[in-house]
Image 1 (spheres, rainbow, N blue to C red):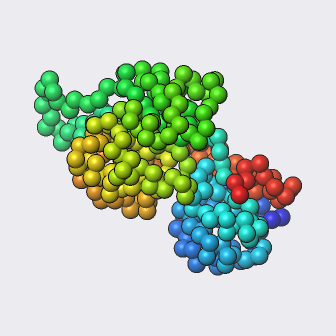
Image 2 (cartoon, one colour; image 1 turned 90 degrees about the vertical axis):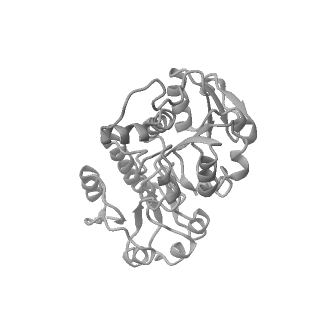
Image 3 (cartoon, helix red, strand yellow; image 1 turned 180 degrees about the horizontal axis):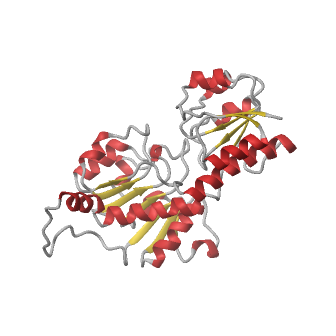
Length: 317
């Protein structure tokens, strides 16, 4: 039976499945392992079931024991793992696509609604109990008829587009390539970022984090947006240059932001906390029981498939 290091707690049913399938070492205290501890704990193991909170940079991967043949990431993203270093070491890296599309898209829509309708301010006023109705009290932006720009029209982007369209939004998108008509669902394709941003009353960032997308939303590109646009991010924090975004909020170039992901999570830039127009969540994209169960089970299945046949359909390197 293969030995697997599981770096974070899973839901109990998933941990039971892991123990039935492998000789699994669980992290019962849900400790956030340092890179050095990951190296030490992996001695004698065949594979690792990792989380986004585990940082496998090139140095860490190069110090893993020869016995490690696969890192199965408990996430659809894999920005926490240096894929080139893993490939050079002959270590497969897998992810959990498809199963978190609906849950993450729901959060994407929540971010749009929360930012446009000033939900953070409304919640605070309701808690204080001192709000007084007036005709212009907490007036926000209505979605109906607004142009939604989707940066990254993959599975999650397409699901957000479908829901947003049902709310009366007009969909635009930018992708590496144009989608087929059935996947576009009537959306307008833009072959460059500037073109998309210039028509985005609301921007939804849905693209993967990569060397090409780091700080893609920055001081220069924010200026392409219409005055008073709303920006939301359900993808990865590395895509947004925080200081530029906070400056855009200060100047009212950006009306509001809706964020579920950040650089250096959970230590988000304190500038966001100073803005009433920042609707912020603690990375809840996949946080439903059904989705987290499906993700963990797929991460376990990825390990099982790899050890049985020597490869895995969800390998990303």
